[in-house]
Image (cartoon, rainbow, N blue to C red; front, top):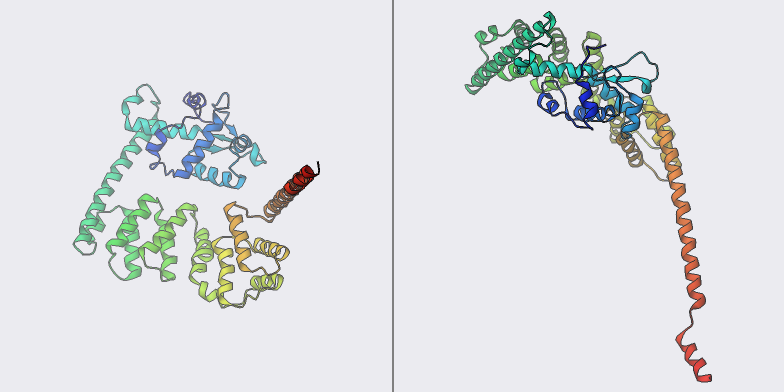
Length: 395
């Protein structure tokens, strides 16, 4: 477990107050707005835990307090925060909802950041060797950050002059930068451009990619004739987001994502048994290129499995006589907005829709009958004015 920290109790007594220090250090800890929202939900549930230290909060309680969160969405966001070392999640329980979320890593990070910026607060706190080393590392990283800012200004100045990056500038870089820069120059046969140098700084500094992963990524990019720095940066961001750190993972990413996008036109002209099965099942002629592109949009852009597309086709066949791709597109778009990705989840959604529709029909029938009764009562007591005058004359 983590060292004892009374600071955790502050959150439980805070009545759902969101600590402003997180906004101040969010960028430095790679926290996005969605991550802050997730932490706000965790704080909301933490308030109800007594005590908070080393007890954490059960994921089931978090789902109960925040019904807008689905299990899949919560799992994905907790995994991201755990990779950023903001929280820790108990892994020794088989059932996901019975696991516990702990905030001790976040408290440790915030404490170290505050002490780094305000050294006077460290008096009498954590004077052991490990803490001293962490302070030294923080100071070194701060110096590195300033150095790279200076280098970036030099690159911008060089770009304004319209030239290329000189060997002197490259030689002043650290070893990792020079290693990757030499590789790019060797593969392209030219000195590295200013734009490529700027992107290389992003890969190494902002994304913190290792030179080994960068060299493998660039090799795979150059094999596919991808030389545009912005295109390479988009690939690098995906590698950072998906935490790909092995050669096998890189090859899988390029095969399943980069090659798929690059070869869409070739793929459309090839025979696809999944499309043939979909067309045979729904009765829709899928020979046209435009219709194949719609199917591939569902399959690769929206990331639906073939089984989910077939399920949407089944619903179209059951509910419409002259349905088409537009109806299926609306069904899948609705599922995507609700994060429904499994056939079982789709069946559950259909069951809820049928129950809701049946209840609405019953309510409409009851209202209709009530209206008819009211009209009958009015007709029974209504007497035309001419009849009243006739009766008066006879009297």
